[in-house]
Length: 166
Image: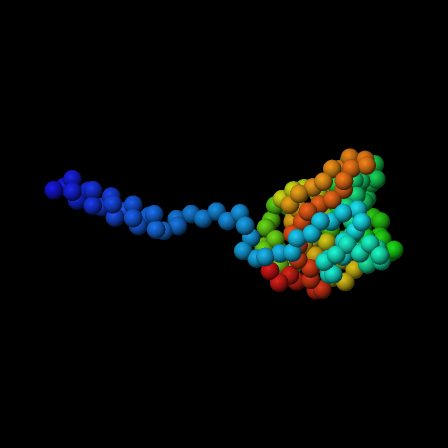
């Protein structure tokens, strides 16, 4: 009798646990973001395009040298553009937020990186734009060598204020 009781309890336990999610690992963000490829041609986050006609509309581009120290080379950096008014070094223009999910970044940070690190796959960044701010997460990177294919595939959100919606 005890054996039947133990078997019954085991079956009930397996049934209950198999219908419940004890642990969930969510690799995908619950919010949907736009995707883009930022390149050396520049990108305008508010319009969601690379403006190759009026490049001064672009918020920034991807280069293979540090925007602060051009001697640091052969990795990919985001370089804020701000059109023809590019500020070098790019003070108060970008912050590497690290491996934080985009949907955990709701506000523009109070401090920015004075000497930004190269872009890293999986890292999120907040950048100043001509007409607001953008947050983006790097999904893929191109070739960073001289003459390489300088690009970063990102998911992003643009905001005209210092707050993000999602």
